[in-house]
Every structure is written in structure tokens, then in C-alpha cells.
Image 1 (tube, protein in one colour):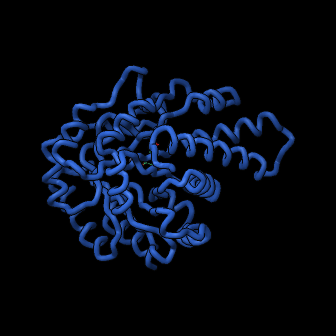
Image 2: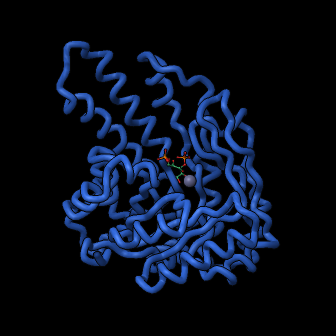
Length: 312
Ligand code: G3H
Ligand code: 13P
Ligand code: ZN
């Protein structure tokens, strides 16, 4: 299936526009009808391009056919500038599978591999993907993944600016994800004064002027969602994200795709917890899922307007 038949676009023109006009295209992760509908409605209402991101585990959760049915059901037009992107593809086979399903963009994540193996894998994926006009993102440096405040995942390593030109040239990729201090999940920083490494970002942007850079692990972890979750039975103390002004600063320096998943998870969970706690008699899922959808929609609109600057 050709992604154009779904009304999807690849990221080439999206990123060229983002770089030229100093905004970032939001990449929001989805995994069911509620998340997808909140994201697409927010993008449509703000006239923003958007990248619909699907992780391997989210694809498994939805199933290939249901995912394609939902994308088909959006009735996208190419001038809406919507891409369907495989997030953190772990293998060549996984990227090929996504491309054959109709994805217009894939990430091959060899960031934990030695440099040469990462190059080799990204090159192989890019050679294949480009035959179908599908965009490819790869990553240099590694992000820490933090699931909760006690279990910190793998340790991070910042991207080495001296490697980026070699990596981009040798792989032929279309965008590069970099590690400058963000991390996945809702527990990103121990204190409010921890800053991103703008010195590294500046150096990378100097080495790769006009090349699209990507920031993973960029959720802001809005405190009102965390507070609501904690107020209505949740347990998420010390959750802390990236400060919005740090992200706005990064957008001015060639970051033209910003990945957000955790903020939607928080918005969803806050909506469900509050709705069930305040209305203990309800048992129609559409009631508490509406609260979840509304929270996610508001979060996406807010981030498009106040962080990405990608709306019209
Ligand atoms: O960066 C990772 C995303 O947040 C996806 O996570 O594999 O739990 O869907 P997931
Ligand atoms: P967050 O956990 O900060 O939302 O990061 C999401 C992400 O990077 C998806 O690839
Ligand atoms: Zn990520």
C-alpha cells in the first residue's frame, strides 16, 4: 500500500518548512481511537502539520489492520501535512513491515549500538525506504528512559558533535535525533534548574546547518495533570518534565521535530481518574474516555501553540 493513498506525506517538505520558519513539527504518539482522534482534531483545528507516531509495542497493541482502518478513516488530504511514523524501530525488518503497511516515515533506532553498526543499520534502512519515498530518522547518542522516580533506565550519553557529519553523510538519513539531556517518561529531572545542553545543540547545528534535528523525550509533564492524578488516587510524586521555555529555545536552533508521548498519557490518565472518582456511579466507558480525549486535545493544542509554534 502506498502511503499517498491514505493522504499521508513524508517528512521532507514538512521539515524544510519547519526549518525555514523556525517551528517544530509535533510528533505525538497514539495507540487507540481516543489518542488518534484527539491528536488529529488538535492538528486540524490549529492548521498544524503533525506526525502520528506509532511505537512497535503500540502497533502490536492496535494490530496492523485496525491501525490501517483508523488511518483510512481520517480521510486525510495531502495538504493537511500528516505523516505516519514508526517510532523507535528496532530492526530493518520492523521498518520494512511499517513501510509495507503504509507508513510514510520510519525511525531506525540503533543508538545503543557501536557507531559503525548504527551507521550500517541506518544505511540499510535508508536505502530500502528511499525506494518508496519514505523518510528515515536515526539517532546518535542515547537518552535515559525513566519509568518512575525510583527505576532509572539505561544511562544516557550525549551526542558527540564531532560524529554528526560523518553519520549523516554515511547513512543518507533525512533527520537526526540527538541526545542533549532529555529523557523518556515522566521523571526527567531531579530539580527545576537542570537545563538542556544548548552548548552541544549549538555545536551540532553548526556542523549540520539546515539539517532537521529531532528531540525525543520532550514531554513537559504538565503539573496540573500530575496533581489531578495524585489527587484522585494516583501515585506520581516528583514527576517533572522539560521546561517549555527550554523547548522553545531548542526550536530556534534547528530542532524541527519534537516527540511527545508521556504528556498524552498523563492527560488521558488524569481525565479517567477524575471522571471516575467524581462520578462513582458511571460505568459507560464513553463517559470517562470523553474526559480523557478532551484533556489530550487541550494538551496537543496548547503544545502546538505554545511550544512547537507550528499552527496557523
Ligand atoms: O519513546 C518511546 C515512546 O514513548 C513509546 O513507548 O513503547 O511504551 O509505546 P511504548
Ligand atoms: P516523552 O516520554 O517525553 O513523551 O518522549 C516521547 C518520545 O520520545 C517518543 O519517541
Ligand atoms: Zn523517543
